[in-house]
Length: 298
Image (tube, rainbow, N blue to C red):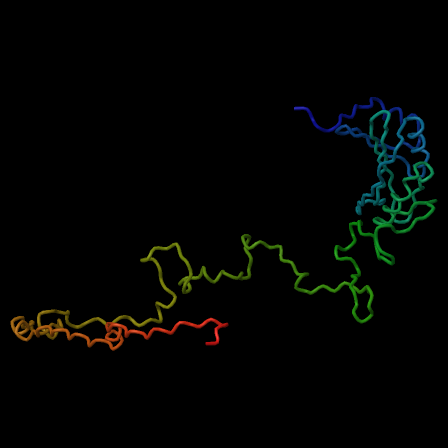
């Protein structure tokens, strides 16, 4: 299956050509996984990049990155990523330095390096000699330290908050609760000496209410030792007599038949007075006299 990424043709012999062009500034080079990296002398970085731009057609500076190796004498690497638009090829150039030795600026070769060098200075503290405006670009004014260094604490040195009393943002030293700073990296499965919450359920005899995979006849309850043993009867229980079973005399069915009462007849309800009124015929009404017309005076 073809890759969706654009294919970058190999530029055969680029390492030998660059080595012959820059001379003593060339230190070491390697070509791995289709990427060419060249280490050059720190003092000659501006001259090397000028040669790569003019003679090898690397027209664009895509990025300047910093790397920190605290175990090295020159702990910092400044990495320049170049792109040749006409050759469709990328090249990586690296120089090494420390906290004191400055790196020559390349803003005269690639003007875009102005902001990129400020980022490396802000994050790693690498000084670029000849930079027209070398100051912080990512962190705030008065920031202490360089965050991308390996020895920089993850919590930083100061924290900011909004003060209701001063009505502005204030900086204060970082205060961390001790509970959040003690870490125990010993796994309980590797033999921890302390007791974790929930370990009390594994005690024998088991605690009350704790689930168990044991069978009923294998369980020893926690309060088995404190519970009194049930008393054993001296004589076995029998059901031979009435006082033992609680049974009474048999029922007298013949007497129950003679004493049975007959059901009483139901009395008829008295008639309601409104029903009698409704049953009577209505009285005849007297006819009214005819009404005279308004204009008749007789």
